[in-house]
Image 1 (tube, one colour):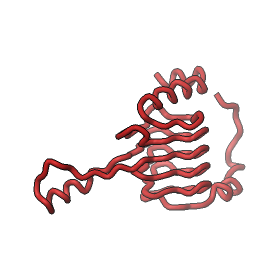
Image 2: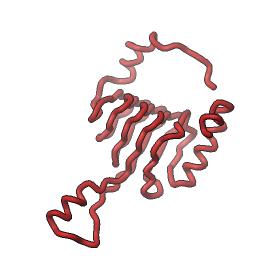
Image 3: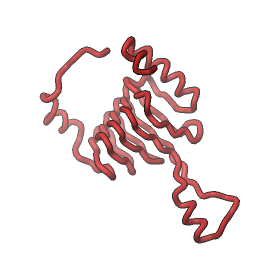
Length: 161
């Protein structure tokens, strides 16, 4: 359904998506440029995810705000319990940031303003403003300024939908 609405009017789709996400507990600052319809939003608690103005989050991205992995180790070390061990960490996607296809952003990570996360990356640490990262785990490749200087001529301009 989202793809159909987007083909008609991307701005209206983003307005509707932003309202729905806000009601689900996502903090929406400004208006995202594009949010794919198949993002996994791990809204473990209100305010767990913040997205910035003019950001883009591509398809099949996972935004993970909690981690139970040490709970199994805790039970092995301490025995069974009625309690579980959890880490919760908010995710923040900065203004003008771009998150590539099928990336995973782990709990507690901030993606800086104007940064680029390459497709398929697993982001385990904060990404500074204006930085390009990629890989598993994601590592810094360059600044967006250098990437622009090296690569902009490979791209072509077209009208927004």
